[in-house]
Length: 296
Image (cartoon, rainbow, N blue to C red; front, side):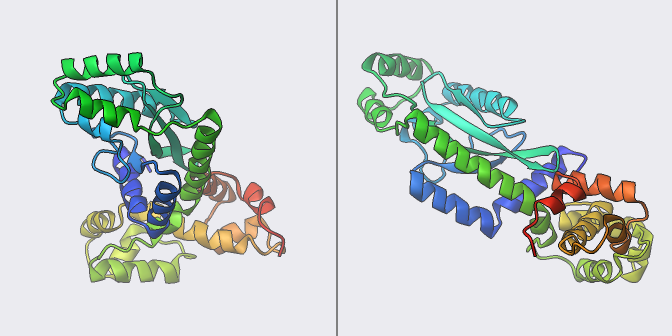
């Protein structure tokens, strides 16, 4: 992926996948906390209007000044979590946490939860929050804010770390399955793209080019390139590489095959190129990947 648009497309596809929806439901029902999968750059509050949104935070999101302050916290959190889990506390004393989702060595988005206290809030703390909210134009009554504020979940350090660790484990899993999810994108697609995918599956071991596939589906190279990217979210070269890497991962299960044999068998013309693309997509070298496979 070479742009934010590519990363956003992957995050959108992952967010619509069954594996993410099942986990989001399980996490929210177990912890009572909101969970969202957000892109690298997002100009909206990730939990607003979602399952288990904190009522106090929902009040703050109603006015532009307090909403802008919350958006600033989200930006700080995104910057802090680019390489690992991070937590940030907002001006009202609530904590949000994010864990990066990575494909290979690239961060493409974040799993985010929070809107919690890490210690029981005090009356003095609420007084400061209520004053800031009023100055920001929040119209909810003080009693409404107080009720919502003190109903905010309080997680001990141990429980908070456990929740973030759950996200870390799932983020690693999402990064690993992102390749399959992208290849199995369930969105409706033109018959031409379906035929092209089938052709690529059948001929991926050959020296394929964009022009060869375009001719196979009876269209111009320019039009095919444009339609393929629109339908799949990734360009032809990336798609072909992902197909080949998925085939290679299966072949790596066979301990009798050398890595160089696998590289050429799935269509790579260079072992160096194979190693580089494998690490880019999977996040580790073929040799390291193989050592972590279960014994057959």
